[in-house]
Figure 1 (cartoon, rainbow, N blue to C red):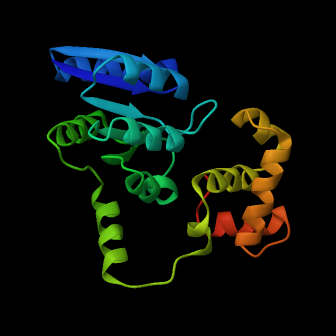
Figure 2 (cartoon, rainbow, N blue to C red; figure 1 turned 90 degrees about the vertical axis):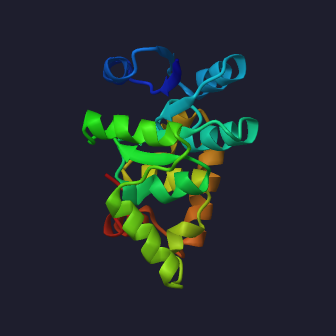
Figure 3 (cartoon, rainbow, N blue to C red; figure 1 turned 30 degrees about the horizontal axis):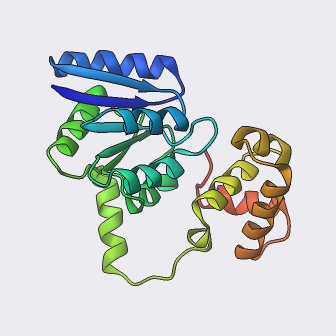
Length: 210
């Protein structure tokens, strides 16, 4: 019996994953979570072999949930399945304890391959990402400015660069406008910038937004 918890706020995605996995794993216990709170509730009340986690969900970000999951259940494998390109989040989620990162553009066969590898105790990364990680290890290069941002600061920076207002970001993250404004100020200070326009230019130039 393979116990899989899928955390994604889109019902179509959860249903599609269930169909894919049902064909591959004949003895399958499938669980669903629509947001970060449900992920934590499901993992506290049941045992799972793997969690497939989206990092863009209502409320707390998937990155926050990932870190808490690894604190509460250090041995629970988490495979992050995201719409965001590897360049934007892969390194961060791997550092946070994920067992793998893949985009939703991957073929179903690749997803099954990734899940099997993680279930076997391995780590899954694409060939391109593996090469990038190896390259980063081999050379001692200076970090890019945005790598100094916390996960929440990075999330807010991307949302600002995508054209969202402080109020829109506050509503989406369920935080106060004052809190988001504070994050914005920190981001601008760390990146040595003064305006949203500069921030947006930087994010686009470094492929940090879709």
